[in-house]
Structures are given as structure tokens and as C-alpha cells.
Image 1: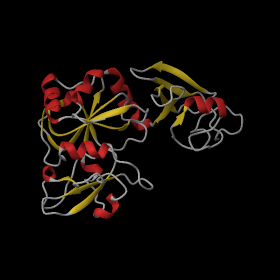
Image 2: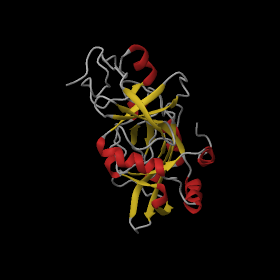
Image 3: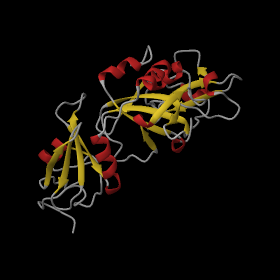
Image 4: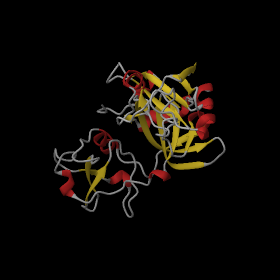
Length: 276
């Protein structure tokens, strides 16, 4: 029976499902991320520290969550994300292993260069490097996206992924956008509901618009991704971008295999010049 009113429980008990929430807000006000009531967390207890964050469990229904660290944009809040039953093994593996690329792979990533992407589920900025990879098994994957992050791929994660230590070698992806286009997309402004335009031009003169806050790949028939360039004025990421050409889907998300790596401060040297 779902928890309600003052019954100790969690967002799962309350019937809202596995949703993320700000821990301090739920404790102080009993509301979830969109004002749901109740978001009662009195029965949620700390289980053990993780390599980043704290594992929590609801004493009423057994649902598990990971509570992150204070946010850079608000040091009074710790974002808390759900762990589905299917993701428990992923969380255990992530917590028990050092997920770092080999020195050889790291050097290859440095040569390609990283951009800073949107924050991970716990609010920590991530670094992205588009590439092609060869796994220790001999399998080759292209496109692949190295992601340096401080949280496990849990919560709302649905993309296929592999672990960084399983990568034997890397190379350039034939779908990777040029560095200056990748950097520009990280600076895109929102000009409408979920519209973050970056205007590009193909070698044959077509104006197209990418939509996203961290675009890395392009798969367009007849066009090599590395040959596109930005619109030739200051409005390539501005409100005029919508008028320059049709909005295209850069590449289907389900085609990208993510490579999960633990973030360290040393990884900042992977950033391309001009990255924020």
C-alpha cells in the first residue's frame, strides 16, 4: 500500500515511482522535484558510503537511492537519484572498481580532445570525447563516446555502455564533428522550449541546425562529419539560427555506445582550447 500523509516512506512508496529529488528539500518540506506530495523520506536511511555519494534505502519498501554531494551551483542541496533493481549490479560494479582508461588510451583521448558536457544525474559536469574504440574482446565500436563522470550510469540511464578499462585502443570516429563545432554546441543558448541551436554549413553549401547542448557526432548521407563548419557570423548559436536551415537529428542516440570512466582533476587537461 503506498505511503501517504505522515506515513514514513519514499517517492516510490508514495506512488510517484523512481524519481530524482533534492534531499534537503524533501527533508525540510516533504515535496519532490515538481511539488509532489508527499515526498516523505523519514524512513529512508543511509546504508553505506560509495566512492562518490551515499547509498540510501527506504525501510518501508526497500527502494534504493544514491545521494550525491553538494552542488557547485547550490552547495545547500544534494541531488538524490533512484537505483532500479535492474541497475543494482551496475552500481555495485561501479563502486568496487577503478574505471580509468589505460595510459595509451588516455593519450589517444588527449589527441582528440574533450568538451565539457551537461551535468551527470548528480549535477556534476562531465567531459565527452567522441571516438571509435576497440575492446579487449576485439569488438570495434563506432561511434563511441568516452564520458568522464563522477556517478554510476543509473537512474534514468538507458543508453548502451562499456567500462573504460575494457577499451584496448581508440581512434578517430568517422562520425565525429570538428572540434570547433563541438565547442560551439556546448555554448548554445536556449531559444525556446528545449531548443539549443548551433548552425552549421555543409561543403555543398546547405545550412543546417543542430539542436543540443553538447553535440559530438553527425551522420548525414553524402556528408563527412569532419567537413562541416559553423555559420560564418556571430549568430551560429543565437536566435537567428532557427532561420538558417532545418533542424536535424545529428545521430540516433541508440547508436552511440558510451564508455564510462571515473573523472579526476587530471582529466581537465583533455579539454580542447576554448572549451568552457
